[in-house]
Amino acid sequence: MDRAGLLCIGHRGAMGHAPENTLSSFRKALELGVQCVEGDVYYVDGRLMVIHDDRLERTTNGSGYLLDHDFDTLRSLNAGEGERIPTLQEVFETVDLKAGVNIELKGANTVRPVAEFIAARRESGWRDDLILVSSFNHGELETIRGMDQHVKLGLLIAGPPADAAASAVALGAYSIHLSLKNIDREFIVHAHSCHLKVFVFTVNEPEDIQRVGALGADGVFTNYPERVLQHQKGRGSIGWV
Image (tube, rainbow, N blue to C red; front, side, top):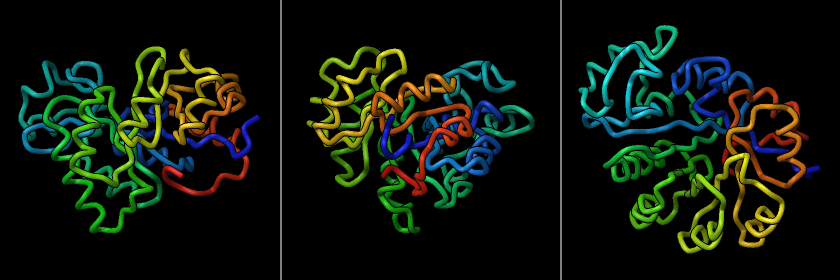
């Protein structure tokens, strides 16, 4: 068994209970007691908006590509149960230092506005251990590292990890994020020897939560935070620690 318990990261809030990436989903995750939440961010019409897909059909009553619409049109859409697509500012206001936030970069031209947003959050009391920036596009992580030497970075890996640990070390990353199907003890041990955290996505079933914990992973992204919290053993801190 894992010694400290798995860090519980609410995937798009608590999307097993509320529409993903909406304020209601993030509020539900906080209500359940997560240490961290994850949300997907695009830069649209001069705003950082929290939504996963590059098209609107799956998660809203709109249609077409997200980036083909202006901010006011996007805000008029129903993102589920009457919720709007939130801005990143609104998500941070909702979380209000009660948990860490993983910003996953999506789409083009997101790096600079996210870096500027994080710098502004520091001025309002957000510590670096409460913010993590991740992406499948490691070039974007390299760019944001050049702009901000202090922000924590997480490498998202779609397939087998291969040389992921070496890439993460070269980037000065904090963590590697692997899918449930590609995780194994050998990789976790290697990552830990490189002083990297390993977070696993998306882990919902109790038997998988148990297995990932037994392998020694540091945390999981989950749609059902209460299931992970039942597995934890005495972890009470918030953020990426």
